[in-house]
Image (cartoon, rainbow, N blue to C red):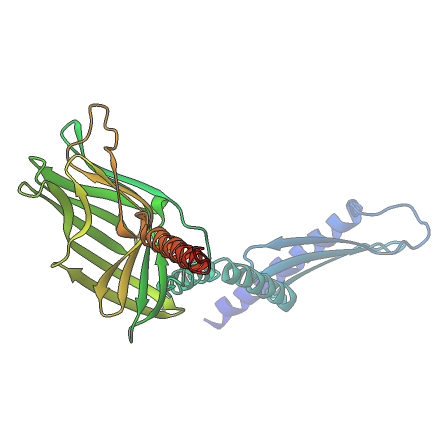
Length: 335
């Protein structure tokens, strides 16, 4: 056994020595592939290879070759480096992107919605009350009602409503341009004329008396809602149902320069420059003969009084003359 071990050891040693000899011989036979002619010592050339596998890990392969006069040294250094700078840069860009995204969904829609809502808020706050009618000249209105194709009632007048009571104190002037007429007639015996305006209505009811052959208004009504004092609204509603105004003969017209109709409770209707007819118009719808109101009828009482005075004076003068003449004749006596 010992002899066998020794032989094995000897064989291994011999083999090792033979391999070493062969290696040395091979090196002496072939020169190194990187040998260059002698010259100045060049600075080592470094070629960096940077490969980035992920946004957070960076791998740098650096190969440094040093060339001495006779010996070439190959030094290969592999460094796995995770560069914090790239990590920070990535984080910075991420933050910038996040900020940009944050500005995108700005609450612009919410702001516009609120503005629209606020705009509609003050709309129903104030309803201005009508103020007193400004001073203006009276305007003559022309109002009429037809029965079929024939005229039934025609009224031409400037109208005012006077109020003087605890509810208000002032005058409302009816504006023809803002007034419409309505009504109806029945067989030229009864008829209604209504005047409607923004602040109220005026209604006149006419009848014909076949016995006396006269036509007149037997009912007058007025309804008015108005602010005679600024900011204070007043409503009046008066009816005079037991009257006889605007009396005229049948087929005649009624005329008056100015006439007041008392409605009660300090309310009066005034009709100025009035021309009125109800029923029995002519062929062409013309007014009939004029019947004047009492205020416009001629007044002969003064003339009569003056005439009476003149007659009395004349009588007195005649009597005085006769008396004086008689005294003269009595002064002479017969011889």
